Image 1: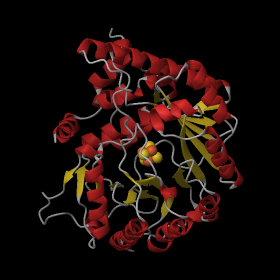
Image 2 (image 1 turned 180 degrees about the vertical axis):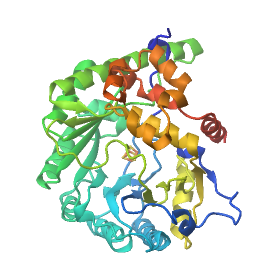
Image 3 (image 1 turned 30 degrees about the vertical axis):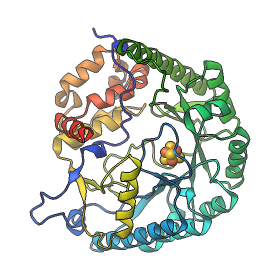
Length: 451
Ligand code: SF4
């Protein structure tokens, strides 16, 4: 039996499979890049998700590896919204009108969508409504924000346009921790932002917190959790920090020992945080996500959408048909990000998919297994069987055998028709997820990282 302690628990956060680093330019198509019109022909379009990506932030958080740039002159945000408008027009045209087109959920993410001013946010909502035809006031609409950009005028626009969920990255309520890992922000500013959000009466508030920060203790972690709980947020996301603070230890052995100690520390903080929230009436939805027991259930559950199509607009957004996941070029390095944003704003023809990855039968099974298993409620065996005509144990015997040997599966769930992680399995979500990647996706990701 392999002990889970030999497996490094924090390898990667699998929030979408396949990862964008496994996407490639779609030039192998017989007539060059595939036309969106062809890609979407015959797809179900009556319950699509709409995602608009705003790749701007005021400052770069120490741990961030998202596609975003810091600061943007006014003319750049205008150019960006102009390009979004052109893209939305082209994409809606490609969806056609032969079958009903309807959006069942919408989200503005980033970056920091509230980097945009209040009038720019109005324009963003207009693009979603008038160009795409999304009825924002009648579907769940989730928007990400930050303490300094969650201003009353922006929140008023968002509330008026139908926002049902607002998610704010606080990370830590302890000023010194925020400085160490995140960005200089004062607790007083964070509390004032939360007050403005509650005043705006958006139904669901999510607060993001981070554990594993240099100098963070179990006590200080608990005090951040309590400060968040004082706002009775409907949701809380607890994220492990992924970028270890520089320790100045140069020797390989010392680095490995420091990594192991940091893994243990994060596991300890995770368990403490989880237990604290469970004791305060929250339920665990996934390793990161907790929901207040009496909170309204709306908005996307931690990327659980398995089957529905997704339309992403903006230079970092992905789109999914049932067969192809596609986006634009991807980068994290600052100069590259700027070049991609500039390229996006100069684009006139949005009628074709640029980079992506086809999700064939095997990959669709992996994706379904991965995304269901990483939810605390687990995978419904009957649903999997109905979709793929097999049991996950038939399709992935070695992977599931390994998880079982490590104590990551909850054997008692099978009687209820579920394949479900044990609490230890859930704690090791970021190790378990990557083990379900296909060899082809792993190879593509590894080749990308070599560049
Ligand atoms: S606000 Fe979010 S997207 Fe922007 S730098 Fe911080 S973590 Fe990254």
